[in-house]
Image (cartoon, rainbow, N blue to C red):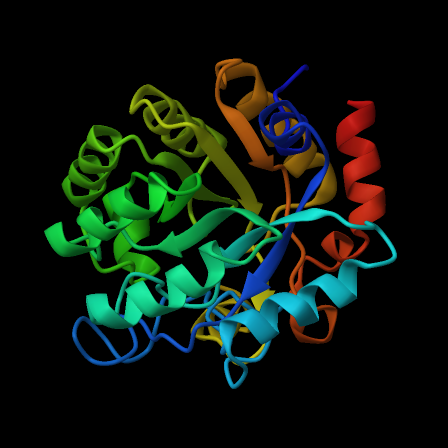
Length: 288
């Protein structure tokens, strides 16, 4: 089970090890502000999946410097990717996006931008801005798809249909953006075959990278309520290893695997508790 890891890709691309600095630009999400819904996706934490990002109260430059300090024991005089992680990072007026993104991309230690967003938040104006940024330094756009199956998408309150994803990928490819797609493994009621169908579909859509994220049940989410009411079970360790192996087997060698698992804030994790030992999980995956 060989795969093209993000670590190797970044070394090949930038000639050295590169670390991500997670940022919070203070944006919201159409699934929270009432445009689509007010509850957010059923699994999403109060931090909008940006629980390890810096404080939104700080300017972007200051957040980058804070992030560098957190990593100073791992890297000296290093280079970084500015990762706009929390909530939906193309869901704001374009002049606001321009200000935030340019402040990051012009930082001397930043070699690329990574922008987490939704496929339904990529207007023509946003695409034009991304194209402009991509001519300065590489831009990664991370799309939260999670699943191709409409029943699952409705259950998690994703708020858009698969054709919206298809259109977003087509538009991003036209301007040469590096596309990374998030998939959640272990969504309630999905079978292993369902998950593999999602991975296969995404890979055939000619993306550049993929993130395989284990479903986490987090405190104070609607998913927690369903879990505690016995409506579904999370994957056990052996099931997850089996699914990961099957996923990697069908991912083409040219697609970079950015993540094989994931770790939320341990204090908020309800299940599966085995996932809190990230070192054990990664060692088991590597051994496999």
